[in-house]
Length: 461
Image (cartoon, rainbow, N blue to C red):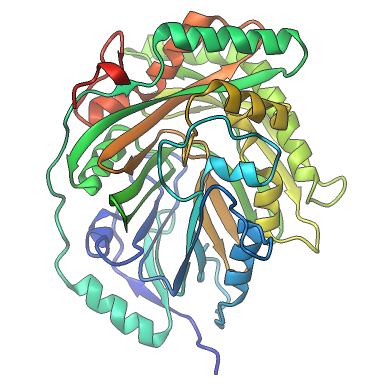
């Protein structure tokens, strides 16, 4: 007999932290965090643990022995989840939760393999979950979605005392992988590619890293407090050489799908929040009026329209919002919205594969931009600019773009900062932007970025 999911009300909490404190040491514990009660636009928190199985892909050769791509293997795993689900508007009724790294794009497009792999996370890692705790902050309601047997287990876990965060500290300041001069050399190379007609825009990023000790959940709480965002997430797991984890406070949706209705929300164009109300309004108005930022945004909209068109019904792709202003705790962004209707013979993982990685963090045209990124950035991006999210048994999906994201591996914490480079970009301004986008994250973690930044070779561990 097919197990049936039941929906049980739970006490509502204004944020997911108390519930997750009771689950975070469970195997496969995951939190998709709306950033409430502070983050604008957030609605649902999704928490789970103890997956029925976990599927990882690794580089090189992310395909399985039969030539199956990671996305196809994940679809097969999802198809094997035998559950009877109730009629419900809740976003997740069992399915896959996990991450897909930027480097998974190497399995989809002829990108190249020049950049070194310095972060040893899998290229993707998803768990198959048959239960979830879901908080709906619009309705101010919390729900447990589980079979009756699983419900008894989860309620026992939730009745236990939560584990408070432990101590966390960075053992040294963050070090930049690139010196200012090395970044500017790469910026100049991008300009040559643009003048030669290879590309219109390149998202050029650099990596920063620092050694740490302590509880990564405590580090996530610091990031969440400093930057409450609607597409945040936390997941950690044991690895061969210590704990690996993702601490993401992303403001950006990549793709969502609900009953075949697809939405992408690319961000391109950023200004800091002002110190005063007048300065804040001035910076927002400057961003809205910026022809350069709007042009960058429109390029990415065109790229995503093309990606969605590969799997959406002909004529269904639309742009209901172009370059709308959205404001967060630390920055203003220009955000566009692209929608479409998924072809009847396509599924959400087909949509993810057709669009991956997100165009807002590659450049245009996408494949050539990814090749140039691989040639210029000295190390691979790992989870940065990949995605966190879920795909449920009914075909619902929601994923983020993993910017403003820290990755823990072998007792080092890595952050990346980047931005779009176009023909009229200025090298010094772009270099400062890579620092400005993550400076507040570094400060929240207790080690502000040195100015000028230390190089990795300068840092004494």
